[in-house]
Figure 1 (spheres, rainbow over the protein chains, first blue to last red):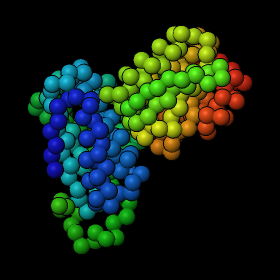
Figure 2 (figure 1 turned 30 degrees about the vertical axis):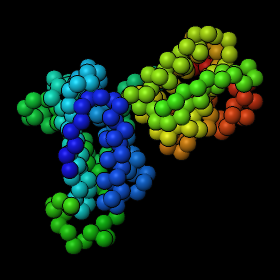
Figure 3 (figure 1 turned 120 degrees about the vertical axis):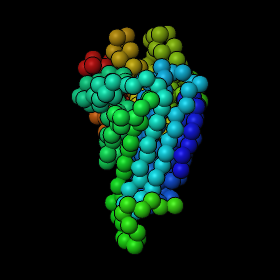
Length: 146
Length: 119
């Protein structure tokens, strides 16, 4: 599944709804789905703020792939490369506005990685593993689920 | 997201309803800072209608807390749903915000809290 949206913050609720729906559909709990929706929301917000400088007329794409043991999200934008230090999570011992988005992404997802070879823009991959896989034993771990 | 402001006892209550994200948090920020600039009253944010809050919403609340420190007024939250409470706990901000269960408790206790000076 691939969704392409304009970089308008008004559309973030659509992104969250799709993530919640797909995550629950493949067996994540409501709470896990909510956490993933927040992680994707934070990642998309980072794109809008840092890659696009709050422009609303650019686009961002979210690809969602479900596997027997995990769900993968790939978020792509066509903005300038964002220096990794901009997206470093800050310490929660500091009390100041801002800087918590990346912290939440890392809390809620099992794997976060930037594709540094992505030719134009930024490509962020986020992965969350299912904790119980009993109903999925017949499927190959590498086979994408429909 | 909807933001409404009302007075109760000597406090200003900001009723926030809906989802607080990158799109809507500037509205909350505007209402919060407008009331804080008026000065005098304690500010309480009613979170009972907030179904979702992201880091931009949390940043707005932290900004309110810091503003209250500078103006030596009191600032607190009440009525947090589980998801908002969990997010604040994860960021360890439950230790810095005065958080009350409901409006009654907030109105009773806010006057006894110290204007926040620990940031």
